[in-house]
Amino acid sequence: MLEGLRSIVLAMSDIGFLFCICPSIGIAGIGLGLLWRGLHRTRLIEGVPTSKVRSAAQGYTELVGMAKLIQDSQIVSPLSGRSCVWYDYTIQENVGMFSHKRLSVNSNSSDNLFVLEDDTGQCVIDPEGAEIQPSKTSIWYGNTAWPEHGPLGAYGILSLGHRYRYTERIIKPGDTLYAIGYFITQGTDYQGELKHDIGAILRAWKNDPQKMRSLDLNQDGNIDMQEWARARRSAEKEAIRERARRATIAVTHLLRASDEKSRPFILSTHLQNHLTRRFRIQAILGLSIFAGVGITSIWAVLTRLGSG
Image (tube, rainbow, N blue to C red):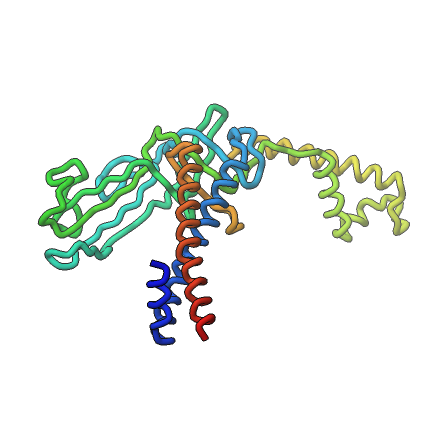
């Protein structure tokens, strides 16, 4: 078999060989991309510990809880009319009576905020930019560009003779939700150390000539040790007042996409072990493609070069 393949490679014209080898290199590149993506996501999911909403550190964080609607809000999937916290849908049209090829004619994805809740609190989820993997996918068929019924209606599972296919993915209220992304707290109840607030106030005063003149009680043009100690006490009082004001602001935790592209934003109704298993399979598939196609391509190039 190898000898027969070698004969084919050597019999090709230069243009014909390039025509075959270039797509092979591209396919090997896709395999390498799948390998890297699968391994990278597996390491991230396994390497970032699961946090509770109340005690989660600011930054890249992993949470697990229950998907819920924000109070007094309502999200409905436009395709089926079902209540959900997130949806996306695609409508495809068959191309030709006997063809299995389909053309996407309509699609949309929800960008509405919703909530992840655990036993310590709630975190608002901004799904924009997220890689979302819901466990619920519905597919049904019809003859109109917009479905006349939901996935449980007539002809819901029969494709024969129907012009359109409707695909809908949703996350419902009450679904278990795994989330990993960039966690920030607004109106925070985390105050940090008081000395940091005092230092920030004093630095701001140093950059304000009018304020510095008011601190110079004897107006000799210098802030002596006693005057600076008095200024520090004033800064401490101001910092405490500001902390008291911040304590009255409602705490809002938010999970969103990170600005770092190497840290993906993933939302899934699958559990963590299911996700890591899926990404490992993706990595194995990528390795198989890269090794198989890549090694074959390298062998073909070396065979051509060796024959010259």
